[in-house]
Structures are given as C-alpha cells and as structure tokens.
Image 1 (tube, one colour):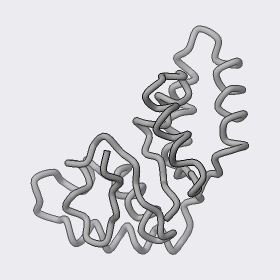
Image 2 (tube, one colour; image 1 turned 135 degrees about the vertical axis):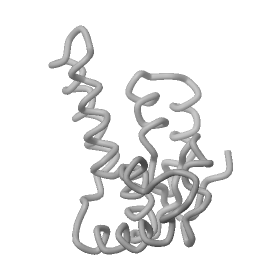
Image 3 (tube, rainbow, N blue to C red; image 1 turned 180 degrees about the vertical axis):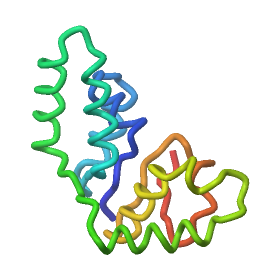
Length: 132
C-alpha cells in the first residue's frame, strides 16, 4: 500500500535528516505522497529560513518526486465525517483540524499514514498507520 507522509517526517526530509531520508527511501518503492496540508505547512517553514527562496526551491524540487494530494470535495466530506466521529473526544476537532484533513486524505485515497504523532490519529476509524 502506498504512503501519505505526515508533515513531521516530510519536514525532516526537507532538512535532509538521516532518519527521515532512510525511512522514506525504504518506503518509496511502494509510493509516497503528501497532502496539500503538509505542503502548506512545509511552505510556511520556508518563509522562516535564512534564504526563503532557496528553501522554497528545495521544497518544489522534492515535490516533483513526491506528489501532492489535493484537498477536494471527497476529502472534505470524509473529513466532516471524521470530525463528527471524534466530537467530544480528548482534543476538540477544531484544534486538530489540519490533522483531520491529513487523515481524511489518507483514508479517501487508500494510503497508509506515516507519522511520528500516532496518538494524534489513533482514534480515527479506518485510518491505517505505518508502524515505525
């Protein structure tokens, strides 16, 4: 099954951290994707770099090899269902809206989510998480 890479691992890949590079290189043959949310979060990070233009170019270079999955009406509807399902849980749906969009993207596209933040996602029915 292909993988949706969460922002934590993707940002580490952008920073060329060895652990992220090794993990994602190992998973790449099965297919890697990122969500539009992850792209947005990574792009925001480029704005804080000493050379934001170079950082943005690096991001765009990497996303030539790791496609971005759009936020469309199917993902939006899936996310709305997830938000309803987790209402009243330990963390309010509004505070975790970006994570819920990422989860909905993974479920809707049949992708396994690769994240370090398993606790942020383990209450979402139907979401496959990569065991690290």
